[in-house]
Image (cartoon, rainbow, N blue to C red):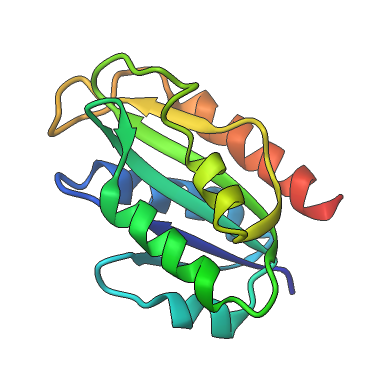
Length: 153
């Protein structure tokens, strides 16, 4: 069965909730493992050899989460070969420059994955501590469908 790892860091629980929601949308088709980068090791992912890695990051002052970035960079140093595919998702409460805050560039520069889904999931929060703005459920479904197609290509 195709394996997916979802990693994230969270301060107020927003990124964790979004990642859990994505997991629930994909778990009927794929074997999914999920973890907070402060509670798992890059070795756990490297040893599991997933087919796809989903990296969840909150946006802080227009940039991806530093702990997630550090984890991805460390993962790149220990992988014997890159993970075949990766995808990204973000939570934020302020506007941000999507050209600057690119976890996909960090994944690519760290040689963590061979191919990265160009589309990403972004969930806007009403406030820093949440909840998410109303009407974003369709974004989850669309992202899950894109990931499913991407992984099977």
